[in-house]
Image (cartoon, rainbow, N blue to C red):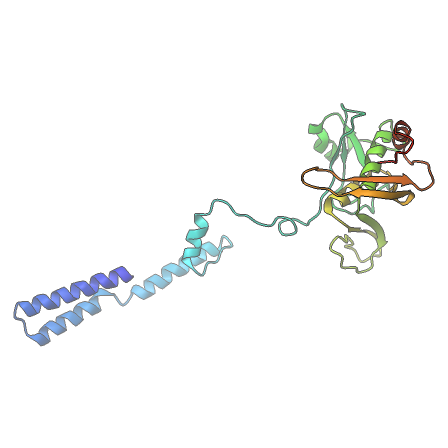
Length: 277
């Protein structure tokens, strides 16, 4: 628009100077210049521009995009990478343990059903979205297929030969943990990790702590491994760091007896003054 106005003004001024130089009457020269100025910009141009922009906005609105400033579209079109805060923005700030591996059974892969933090359906033997249980699979690639096909799922229970290894794994994950989960009746609590979404007084799960630690506790509950922390006294904690990439605690059983056979065996192999880690 600005370029068109400058070009028109330059042309009109040139015609006026040319008419004056050729000896045309001054009034006639001014009349011709004004006529050219009016004819340079058609009366229908603003209407055409408005209709064109309105049609463009309508087409973009069909794709759920309404733009007030055209340069914003140009900037977005030239964007190659969009950086966003994923946790709590694009996701629910929740994690779920889906696979379990033990060195005692390297050829067997274990999976956990269910999503989220709700463990109210654990142990009832039903395949519901919330809650879940532990099952074994022949390979890692078949975990998703086994979970979706109930006929091939082999549930791991307390009588299974793999349960001792699973129990030692989840007991360690529970002791090295600062999170907590509680099954409560629905009480209108607005905690961000409260998964109570019913109004019938059913049990729901309230989780507090880091998402990774909560996921390990929920996985332990799905595997029917009781939380051993109430019968252990924590003596020392070494927090997780990006350099060490692990968290460590030193704990001692309150009653003197370990809840897990693997813990008892490891304690017998330690020096006399050693504590359970």
